[in-house]
Length: 208
Figure 1 (tube, rainbow, N blue to C red):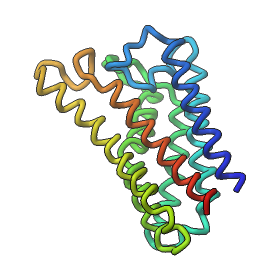
Figure 2 (figure 1 turned 90 degrees about the horizontal axis):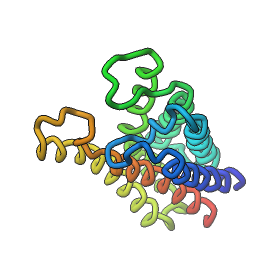
Figure 3 (figure 1 turned 135 degrees about the horizontal axis):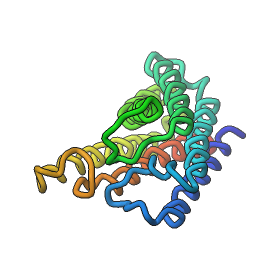
Figure 4 (figure 1 turned 90 degrees about the vertical axis):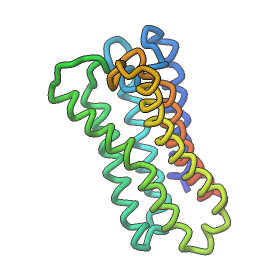
């Protein structure tokens, strides 16, 4: 179960790095700036390491549960998570532009695409994975924790998009991004819920 420990280790490292960047890059307003913007300018390399840590822990978890994902939903989820892991690595390679930047470039477009894959599909892949794992009696002993983690991931994604909708309702002239679209903290909350799901599955595997 070395891979399960690796999942937890790299998840913890990611959270430590993310917390550290809040202090290193205080110029970024966390209320409306997304975590990808920590990859811009000084200390940007640290955020790229964080994305790599995230990708590593997804792969480590896959190694842990691969043989248990034999059902149709399980097989779909494991390859889906392979795509998510690749997207995370690429998100670290392709640097984003500031959220208020109106011009576009290839690196920013590719980063946005990779980010969309993770943000939009992680809860779906997580749901399929848990459904696949619960086909086995052994994993059913951890059902409540795994379901809780999956629901939490869905709440994280919904809260992120709800923050955009609510901000636009409060100020219809705010546009989709900017100082009056308060998606920063919901973005961080969403990311933490995704990380917690990985930790919960890894801890469940260790207990089993």
